[in-house]
Length: 307
Ligand code: APR
Image (cartoon, protein in one colour):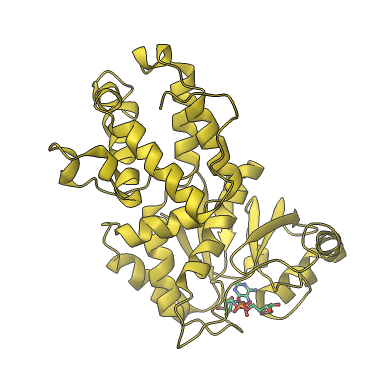
């Protein structure tokens, strides 16, 4: 779980500082204005380049992109565009996506620490208490390998975040799991399914196999090993092909915790491969990804997957 501080985001020493950008990637007020002012012209120059190349139409809401941090005490600025708050439409998925995409991008960059402002809670009008609830839930459910700092500008915002953190129980719902999955970019899915496709039956003899380890690394990065409970359904003879996508993630988490995390040898991984439930869980994920992100789960042309 993240660390909470009151302060100015531009003064944070972290590998990554997150900016509450606009789609045009131009300077603005609030966090965005402060970052460009303190960071100097190199950041805006990098943003202009992105607009001329990858984001001709602008950075979509809920996505994230990295640039230099210029003169800031950080290595990178990750720009993300939060949703404008709406009373009539639930845009929570987009707000959560800003946080998740930023975290995943920071991991890809090799960052070890990251500082977030309270995205969308300024000009974009998101109520701070609700953002605090969403962010607390997210950080207690998705597993990330980064030190995360949440930087609140005012003492009253900090209090709202502290309250939300205290109130968060750690029972992750199916809807929250799906929300995490929806923010996983295509390159991570592709890497995961390619890793699963490379596993042969010989690899399954023991879990020390490099191929199996590689697949688990990608499951972990997806991040499909979420901090969730697994439901009782898996302990009794549940038909593995009838798993929902959230159950598939719970099952993978269960295998990770019970066996892989403990260094193997418990037989859980082998048992779940033999009874068909791990292959079924991966199949469920593949179908879900194929439906929600066509092309991302593409299988290699000639590879016959064991899992
Ligand atoms: N450090 C930390 N937090 C700050 C800072 C700062 N220097 N300045 C403002 N904040 C806080 C605000 O109090 C608010 O709670 O950050 C939160 C986010 O506010 P905004 O920066 O206004 O971000 P957002 O609501 O996402 O609006 C983004 O505003 O500046 C424009 O170009 C930007 O169009 C974009 C929009």
